[in-house]
Amino acid sequence: MSATEHISINKHIAIAFPNMKISNLATRNLQEFYMYKLEVENLSPKTVINIHRCIHESLKQAVLERYIPFNPCDAVVLPKTIKPEIEILTIAEQNKLMQTSYQFRYGIFIRLALTTGMRLGEILGLKWENIDLYTQTLWVRQTLNRLEKIDYDGHGNKTEIIIQTPKTQNSIRSIPLMPFIVNELKEWRNIQLHDKSSAGMDYVENGLVVTNPLGGYVEPRTFKDAYNKILEASKIGHFTFHALRHTFCTRALENDMDAKTVSSIMGHYSVAFTLDTYAHVLDSHKREEMMKMQNLFTPAQISERQSYPVIVTPSLNGFILNPVDFEDLSIESDNLQYGIDCLQNSICQIIAT
Image (cartoon, rainbow, N blue to C red):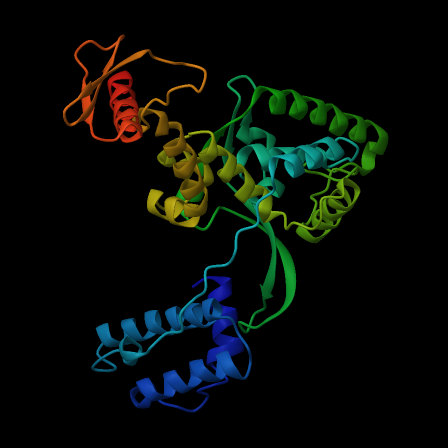
């Protein structure tokens, strides 16, 4: 069981049903418990669903071991989650942020996020051994995050920095690097070597790419403070660091990178998730692509300056119109203006074919 599941049990579940036997736990109890979490404690639907999953897995095992005849979680009605609005930088905002980032120590990692879609924990946990500057490839193999610490009795009352492998297999991935980022990583490595020379014996060599002047890791809160200073200096408004990841994915789709490749680079669990999450990008892109095709289906228009001579011959029924340049075309009408209009439309159709 993961640390987050331990915390979920101790914070939310154990205190809710302290003396209830598992055999007495009913769907009604769980439904009331979830509604209390939603309406009284104001937990998000996503958090309540995560708690439910933890309980469901535990009771599923209880069913398999015949402690209970069925899983009461199966009949629970879960709250609907609202898909959060995705923050995306415009191209102008993206360029302004990149330009400003060159003025700051950790600006290289803002540019790395914008050009790879990496998560903050993935960047902070990145090691030099996971970067091949020759082949211009980066491998995501570990993350650095501050998590609640689980003490000996299973309670989480403190936090600690944890470097661990990504939670899902899809998150362990390779990412091709753009040449200019490769060059900037080489420059950053020189900065680290200068830090090491200046710090002397106080320098800590840990192989991490993101380090403070003494070689130590940079924790998420510290990095976010640095990121917010860059944002403030760029004067583009507030964006979460995760918005840089969304921005990369959006730019990739806008520039016709196929969805399977984008999904692989982002570390998503499926292409369907990528397409669903960034559907707004695809909708806009589809509209632009359709506009490119309109000339294929729009009849050619006769220029106002272009004219075609027409021979008009009176007839018993009105007029016969014969355009000189279109020998096979002839229009007969009892109204001269109507005949001219019909003739113009016929010429348009001939030109369009």
